[in-house]
Length: 126
Picture 1 (cartoon, rainbow, N blue to C red):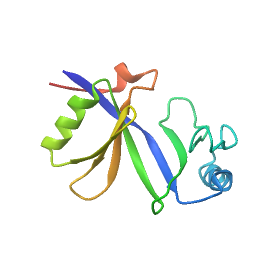
Picture 2 (cartoon, rainbow, N blue to C red):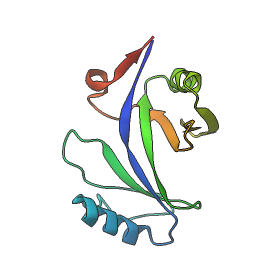
Picture 3 (cartoon, one colour):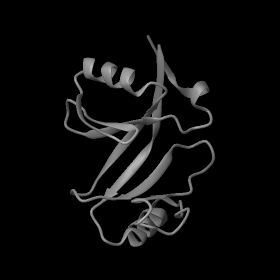
Picture 4 (cartoon, rainbow, N blue to C red):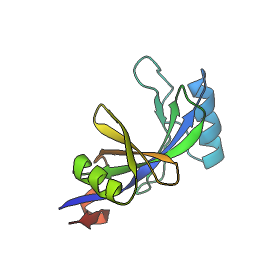
């Protein structure tokens, strides 16, 4: 048995100016960047979302811009197996997460649990 749930959205931006990308998306969503970009440390800038909402991050990438979702799970391998049984494909294991592709072509990630209310809101799978 394991659990999983939608964790958040990542706005992948093929850009050399992550601060400008985060500023745009922060203004567009009414959720300012939590901090300035520090690309040497991390390609992510988190936006300040209202309490209890899923996270939104702006990410600098080297592929065409797109949006992808993160699914958080207390057992990444079991969740990847479950989603493969539904038709998804594993693309890559990176650090502590797994990149998957839906049968419809969208890429998404399975990531470790990060939300404080995970156990209350997560789906439980056999």
